[in-house]
Amino acid sequence: MKVSGFSFIKNGDKLYIPVKESILSVLPLVDEFVIAVGDCDEDDTTLKTIESIGSDKIKIIHTVWDVKKYDKNTEFARQTDIAKEACTGDWLMYIQADEAIHEDDYDTILKGMKDNLKNLEIDGLLFKYRHFWGDFEHYHQSHKWYPREIRIIKNDKHIHSWRDAQSFRKFTKPFDGSPSAYMDDDSLKLNVKLIDAYIYHYGYVRPPEMMSYKKQVMDRSYHGKEQADKKFKKDPLIFDYGPLNQIAKFKGSHPSIMRQWIAKHNWKSKLQYKGRRDKTRPVHKHEKLQYRILSWIEYKLLGGKQIGGFKNYNIK
Image 1: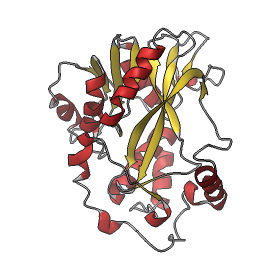
Image 2 (image 1 turned 90 degrees about the horizontal axis):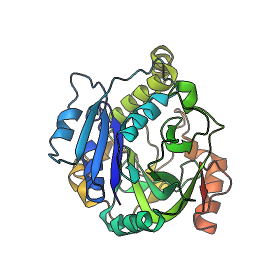
Image 3 (image 1 turned 90 degrees about the vertical axis):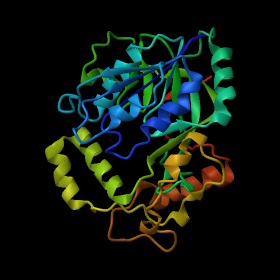
C-alpha cells in the first residue's frame, strides 16, 4: 500500500499559517508529499519554509493562481487538483495548510487505509474535526462548523476537489477543469468510512489584525478585488473573535509538532475572555440564537450528533 500526501498553498507565511507544521504532521504516514506552491508575493517566505523541511518525500509543483477566472474560491479546488494529479499512491491523504494531524491517531489512520484498500464500495475516509478559535485553548462545538470532513481518498481519476476545496466529489461527466466544473452539483458524494481520528484546524487562530487581513484575502478570491475591498472598508480593521468564555474549552493535547507554533501565541491580551459581545460589530454565525440553541441540543443532549445540516458524503 502506497500513500501520497497532497496540499496547496500561497503566501502561507504572510498569512500566518503553520505550513511547515502541517506537512510534518502528515509526513510519517506517507511515502510522498506533493504540494502545489502558488506564485507567492515577494515578501513571503513560504517556499523557503517548505524547502527547509529537507525531506526527499516532498515534491513541489510551482503554480500560477488565477482568481479572476476561478472565482468563488474555485481556484483552491483547481490548485488541490494540480497536486492530486501528481500523486502516485493507492491512498491520497489531503491536508490543508492550516490543519494538522495528531500522532496519537496515526495507528487508527493507517488501519483505516489498510482495512478499506480493497473495499470497492469505499471511496475515502472521514475524519472528525476540532476547529480552534482565537487561541489554542478554545474550539467550536457549534452547528455552524462542520464536525467531519473527507481527508483521505482513493487514487481515482474521477474524484476531484469540489467548490472551495473543502471536500471532494466523484464526477460522472467529462471533467474539463473549468470553474463551472468545480461547482457541479450533479457530481456524486463519496462513500466513506468514519474513523476515530481528528483534524486539528487552526485557520482561525492568529493575531486579530492578521485574521482581518486573511478575511480580506479570502473575500478577494471569492468576490473579486473590487467588491471585496469595498466590503473590507466596512469591516473592523482588527478582527473581533468575541467572548471566548462562550466557546468550548479544549482540555486535550495538540499535535506535538505544533508546540513551537503554539509558543508563538502572544496576542492573548487582545482577546476577550469574559463579558458579552460588542454589539456594534456583525454577529458571527455561531453567536446567533438559533444556532446556539441547536448547538446546545446537539452537543449537550445528543453527544455531538448533528441535526440536519449539509453533509458532503455518504457514511457506509
